[in-house]
Length: 470
Image 1 (spheres, rainbow, N blue to C red):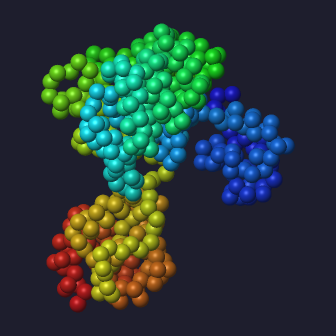
Image 2: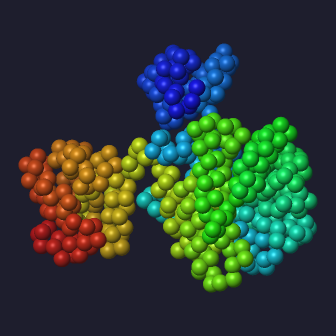
Image 3: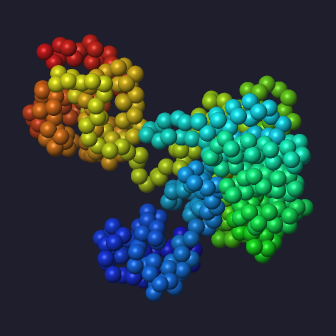
């Protein structure tokens, strides 16, 4: 049965149907619906984990398993999950396991440069609407072909970071030297080809590591290698159909799209694996300004993220390149069914007292963090009342009746804000001005219409609040 057509009834028939609520859901039918929507996992049903339901559990797993296999790279807290996708198009459900980004180092780098790149990769962090955006992996490339030198480089990297590694060489003897020092950390091996597949497969089996299968611009060969490796006993695979800059961009995108379509729409198990993209190829053979190569790499990375790549290998460490890449990734991998929201309630900025202003906003994450940033940048000491608008922006919430006088009144009472602030004056966003009269009638508070844009809050509070609070 195509996974897209699975109904809650199909799932419900295989559940224990005890309505025990141990899963945290009211009944088994509701749990079945959440399973279909991938909002819960089978393991959250304790009765289903009992031996007498073993067959039902297996049938449910077969029904619900993703068409793109999930592959684990690394160990510990920073381990990375690749793949696991249920659908081809984001609007159908949601994407899981955001595209992992690996930054490369090689065995020709001096120790200080190597250390700088590894530490820079591990420490990269950017706060974005409540999310901490990070880089995920380090790709160690053998550019010398010297097995001992590669092993020494891998040891330096493994000793200095807990990030998962990608060991990159087509020479099995070189890869084996790296595995001798980092094999216990479950690195991703790059790569098996039609010429070296058996030796690479032996390494993957010996060290229990996932393996990349590479067949540039040859999907038939990629499927043949996958079938051979599966029969040989290697099933944790990642597929590399090739990354081609310039004239090859069309082939690159077509290959990625065809592979994901075959997996998700045709249920072709031979291509149901995570996909690898290597925008680092923008640097190969390039002799011009580094900024141009980095720009080309960034453009390719954005194409690969939007066209189903589950892992990228990149070279540049420039912030202007990495920031848009990780932000694009985050935007694509949010749940399209649920607005990104923050917890409603009272937020405190600076050191406010009873005479400090009380402002209001919605709990849409982008709105909240924009407002919070402008308040913090302007060094405004104030209280901020965040209303639960179900993740809608202020203007949308007002239009959709998710931000109402009754909701504001309920929040003021529940949080006992009249006692906290020592006054009954509420500053609302300019975009919610139409609610001012209704709020005053409902709450008994004086409503002050603030700026339309939150960037105006510092100036508004500085210029007008002293008079308004008198």
